[in-house]
Image 1: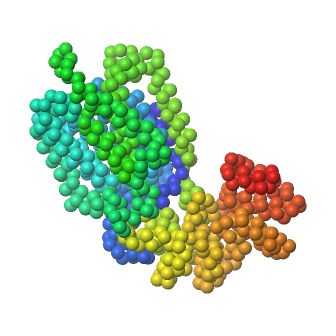
Image 2: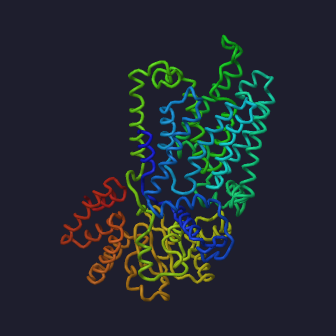
Length: 614
């Protein structure tokens, strides 16, 4: 029950990932029978050949979304969360398995990292399941029976092929299978060197080594020659490491940033702590394996829960994580695996007396009976407190500019749009085919690096923006307007352009001479990129002109109509009523109370109240 609640809670939340929406549109078009071999969503590369590396995942995402809406995303994330919970239980040897260990480890993962809402969701669930199957294959690698080998390596092959069909990060799975084959070869070759063999891990037969190599080779063959992604899916996983233009992701997308040890600790403290603990555990067990010379009374060396394979896994994922942020979740999962393996075998007193899994003939006791429910409640509480929008479903209003799309449809803004990079996916889903985007998240399947750099730079560079508009002639812009980031802010001061829509999520700018009918809806007095400052400037310079003052108020109310909880618009309205004098201070106080309800501790709210002496 606790596991089910964890899975459901981890799957709840508002949906705002921009990449999800173009994935949904691709799934929709594929199911409708559309030709997706060339691009139909952008005007910049319309008709260009486009690759599809996550097609099965896109179909699954849209097939359920078309029937259940955002509830489908909840169910899908809950299923993936359940897979993670089960995977860590399966990774343990049969005698050490207990749901409590899976709950602690899988629940810990869900508390550390929120699940994404795009094809990468499948990778986040299938990777720990593959690790569990690899543990199972390693434990049984001494067998020579063809039937037993098929039971060990068949599921690994099926899982890897399915993963490759779902998401391009399956390249990590191919890497693991190749390393497993190489590792088993080393184990088999050193079988006559007892001390080294103890450190490497369980014995592997020649048949198991061959079976592992065949599994890796067949999975790679299917990926390369059968699945739609082909070789491109293998290349894109590490494309960010290339130099020059090919490595543009390093400079523009946070997912590909290189981390140093300090940055890893500061940005991902829980993962860093897990990795440090795993390093200590694997070093301890390796040293014990190398220096121990005595054996048990029956002449058998006790099997270590961690060995050279786990050391290699940890070092590899730690190196990848320091090389790119995108691999940090993989490090988290590997470090958690090492922890649960050590917990299951290295702490028998906890397993037997408190959990009851290692020695089932011994009673768990009252402390063990309480440990499960108590741990579950703690995990649920942590997940609830850490989740940005628990127990909620639907589009995230802070990310998805539904009001801007409604405005565009109502005012017949069609054709080509200059959109901020992160708004491309939403535009493809909500406005296509009436509107075609300049750019979106398909940066590794369609858009070349040189174009991506120009598109991203034009968000901040007015000269580059003007040059690109001379080339394509697009006359309207969909810009980001979040409090912490605003794209195309320079257009607010360009006399050729006008802001005709404002919300806390997006701004729509249009070229004045091409959209004369929209000028009546433009923001003529307020600066949409700095609303509060422009209110002060206008009222201090033109406070005696009641017509202009009334127009400022109307523009503010239009902003609040689109974003009633916008701190920027409410702060500007507070200043507006304050500067109008004592006759309007009752209205000012109502806005102040509203701000104190919305965000009493926000720095902007505290600053404006300080300025007003309140």
